[in-house]
Amino acid sequence: MTNPRLAARAIDALRRGWPIRIGTLGLLPIETADPVRLAAFDPEEEAPVLLSAGRAETLKLANQLEAAVPDAPVLVDRAPWIDFATATALADPQLDLATPLKGPFRAITVIAPADAGAALRLARVAGMLPAFFVRSGGQGEVTLSPSDIDAHEDAIRLSIAARARLPVAHAEDAEIVAFRTPEGPGEHVALLIGSPNGAPPLVRLHSECLTGDALGSLKCDCGPQLDAALKAIAASDWGILLYLRQEGRGIGLVNKLRAYALQDQGFDTVDANTRLGFAIDARDFGVAARMLDLLGQREVRLLTNNPGKVQGLEAHGIRVAERVPHFLPTNKHNEQYLATKRDRTGHQL
Ligand SMILES: Nc1nc2c(ncn2[C@@H]2O[C@H](COP(=O)(O)OP(=O)(O)OP(=O)(O)O)[C@@H](O)[C@H]2O)c(=O)[nH]1
Ligand SMILES: [Zn+2]
Image 1 (spheres, rainbow, N blue to C red):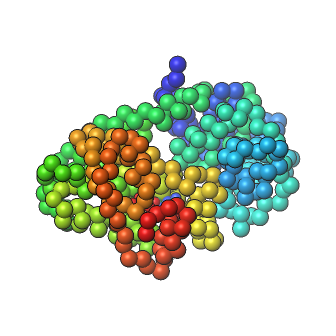
Image 2 (cartoon, rainbow, N blue to C red):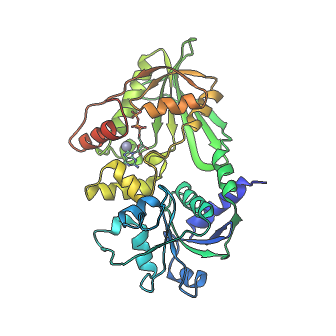
Image 3 (cartoon, helix red, strand yellow):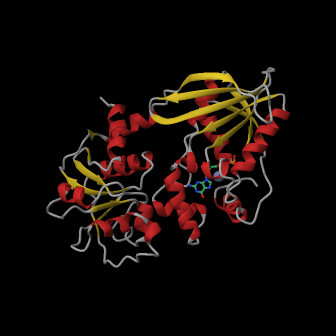
């Protein structure tokens, strides 16, 4: 029996810096714990450090083990000089320039790799750095299994929570619909513009970008894209803008800002995500498909340059009758970002 509630409780524990237990592994999250909690969790000072493959690669640890599997979790032996501060530096690549890591660090065989991989997945879902102290048989606030985490991720129990008229600058007759899921705190929103006319609506999937949407960031194209999408939908007969709470391509605001800090050091948007231990794009477009479904729309014209969004919707049963390009002029701050999307993530720009 799997229980998605356990994953929800484990995410809460991780964000509070409490240890959890997955299968046979006790796990203390490095980002939110502190030296006192580490001493309570691991009085013998023996617990090794669990890292993502992306992070281990930067630390030149990924190839130390024979038959290293790409994306497999990596365990770092607990040498005597690995105190809490060193473990934090191991976990967080932002500190690499300020605190060059001395080492030597040694990768050891991962105990219970399936449980270890599940721990890294859960940290990512919690919007945290994927890094833990690990003890075999350790205690935790919550005990769960990898399949509880999968069940939590699979359950898109989305429902419409509220709807109201919302006049906006580009369309005075718009209607807003809010959606909720018990699985996540993010409340997704749809803005419906114009009246259904039997043809597929012009649809834009907009992923939340606090910096671009609210603060006018020039590092990306989100703000102008949002505005232009609303304008284009208002100019078409009818359409829908989905505002998805998938900040930072699904890694969360704090991790996106960590990626920005790495970009300040010269890494591009793809490498920054990978170095932090995240997927290049962690979004699940099944949520968007389910929202369209609840709005009674199974076929759309999609405003996007990203073929991944087309595939993401189609994989979840929404037909994309047409892809409508959505390109905005660049500025000197986002030129490189957009070039990276074109060259490395298959965007059709
Ligand atoms: N992780 C990360 N997320 C970023 C970065 N820059 C922007 N984002 C996020 O990327 C998302 C915006 O992507 P979209 O506008 O949907 O762009 P897209 O997937 O390239 O597709 P289209 O614009 O539809 O062509 C938002 O959630 C932003 O917060 C970055 O450097 N790193
Ligand atoms: Zn943005």
